[in-house]
Every structure is written in structure tokens, then in C-alpha cells.
Length: 202
Image 1 (tube, rainbow, N blue to C red):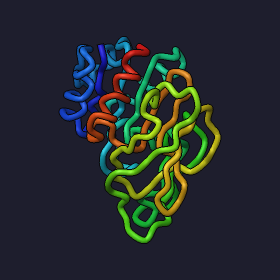
Image 2: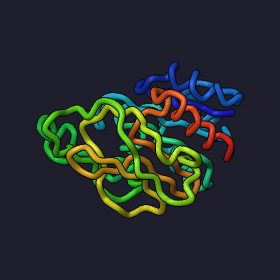
Image 3: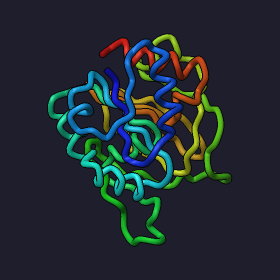
Image 4: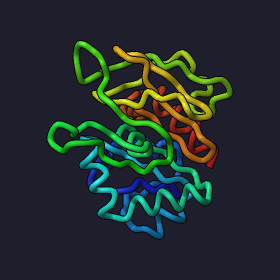
């Protein structure tokens, strides 16, 4: 079973439909036991870093994610669901001074892109790492992005990069933890193939 964590953020139904194309049973839930025991957990995210962290903490999602990290259970973050795996985010620094703490699974901050037009919205190519699980057979494909902030620090095992003003992290593969800044559920056939690459590893 694949569980999509419902913490009040994300395109839950579109994500559910996309992951269900793999043939796996997919549930949208905030139930801790289901999320802990599922073969794969998806952490979606739409909106701002601060509001996503607030929602995650409200349902105990931080504890669920950290427990899965300790047990090396496969987990997949999407968009801000990826960003909150980092140490901090500065998206609401104007309204709330200082950075908002993230889960701290990966080092680095999520900061505003230096680009003439924001948000970065639309299709973009991705430079995939060698021997990638997620991008197997998809090395030349484009994926759909909607964001104004991104992580830019190189400190992880397998990183896929993209460029929009800045060079930024488009995806990470770190043992049992995976994440994409882009939306695979909105990325057509390439996105569905990437999702299947992940679910085939469960």
C-alpha cells in the first residue's frame, strides 16, 4: 500500500490518481499507523513552506517522517513536501522574521530563486544523476514545475539539477528517501513513468 499523507496541503486527489496508475493500492490519510506501515509514503505540498510545516506538525507528520527515516522506509516528497525535508525555508521571512525550521533531514535552506519572473511555472529539463532510480529511462525528459523558492546546496548522494535563474535541486535520491521539486503527477507520461520507477522499488 502507498499512503499519501493528508496534512492539509497538496494536490491530494491528483496525486492519488497518478500513483494508482502503478497498480498499487493508494490511500489518502492522516492515520499515523497506516502512514507508518505503508510500503511507501508520499508527502505532497502546495503553498508556502511555513504553512506546510504548520500543517505537518498538527497531524504529527514530522514524527511519522522521522520514524520512517530511522527505519529506512521508502518516502517520497513532492514540491514543498520536498522543501520541508531541508533545515529551513525563508519564504515568509518578510512577514515572520527569520527562517522557518524544516525537518532537517537534509542540510541547507530553501531560498528565493534569482530569476526575472517568478514563479517558475512550466516545463523544464532536468539533469539527472548517473545510476538514478527515479530517472531511469527518463534522462532527456522535461517535468512540470510551479515554485519561487528552491534548495541550492549540494550535499546529498544523488541530485538532479535544473536551472531557472539559479541552478537548483530538482530531485534527490537518498537511500530510502526520494523527493522532487517538480510535480510528477502533473508531468504527463514522463511523470507517471518516474512514479512507477519509484513504486517498482517498494
